[in-house]
Length: 227
Image (tube, rainbow, N blue to C red; front, side, top):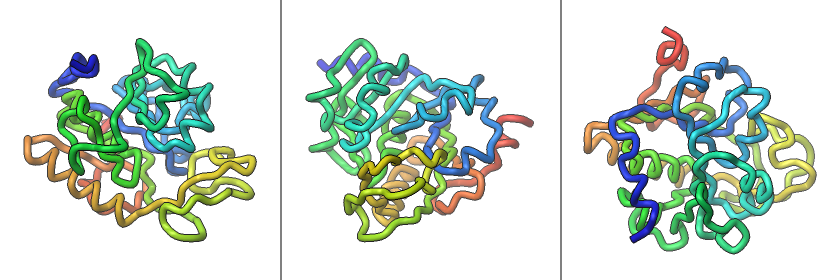
């Protein structure tokens, strides 16, 4: 039995906030995250001091991100869900769980012990994690869903100059390589995720400021967290 099964439905019926990494985070008052269960993605640690919060959970699956952020991920003092793509250099620990994303069982996995589908975006994996943990309502922020890039979707590119696609210009800085986004595949994944949540009476709410994604129910983060 995988030890990850002990986390199943840990937060049954509760709410969480999935914090994606778009530039819109810079236009938000994120003080509310100190009162919420936050799930941070990829290089969200670059904003901890500025944004003033720390996540309860963390998700990263892209091998380039895992390699670039290996030391920072190791240092995170929260529960971490890491793709098995990084198992050779980020071993499991008391806080670190490996997820099978290389051979996932289905497009949206209801059983994290069997794996999770990457679906073209770490946000899709985070939605599977939140589902497994039992959250009834997931609020998305920082899901800008718009990128400046050259080349084809999923193509590996070296970034020269400041990163305008994330909340800090140093996100993929200093000549680091990243994989171009695949917005079409992401939207297919998001559509499936919404269907899976609504099938069992759960909700995904997109509270991104000026976000371009049209798949999820929309709401103002101020109405959700400050009213």
